[in-house]
Image 1 (cartoon, helix red, strand yellow):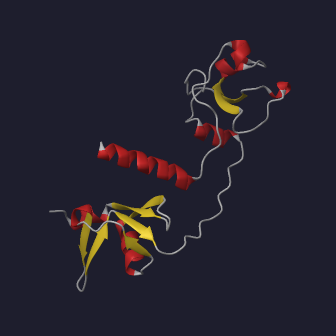
Image 2 (cartoon, one colour):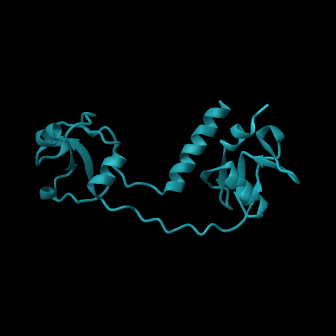
Image 3 (cartoon, one colour):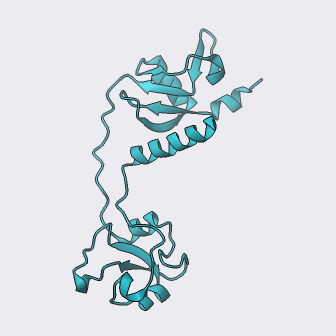
Length: 172
């Protein structure tokens, strides 16, 4: 038997009208969306959810709900290329050696050789690797990147990819 407090700590996955997983919400928020008819259950099997009792109502809260209303999402813009955002993308580690100490930014193709200050050309590098690479290309130095630099993706897309990976792992 699940206690009331354990149920209130659960989360529900919210899908958009076109079934894109958007986010996780706590069970209280899911109840509000269901009761106000802004969302509908996607699971109709009792094992895939929780029964919530009030004095006058017994409500089934599924693990997955779908919004019935068009979500007026804020327009998301790719963040500017700056130190904080590049460090976040690269998980605060050097993209050449993996170090997390004395981090700087490095242009993969140096600006003096036509490289742009863009998401696919700027990476996090420790001072040692950055000075070793200097004003040369990766080919000239024989160095390799641990990951290919790219612009951040929309948070909903990132959540959807993570959600589908975890769902796939649960099926296996």
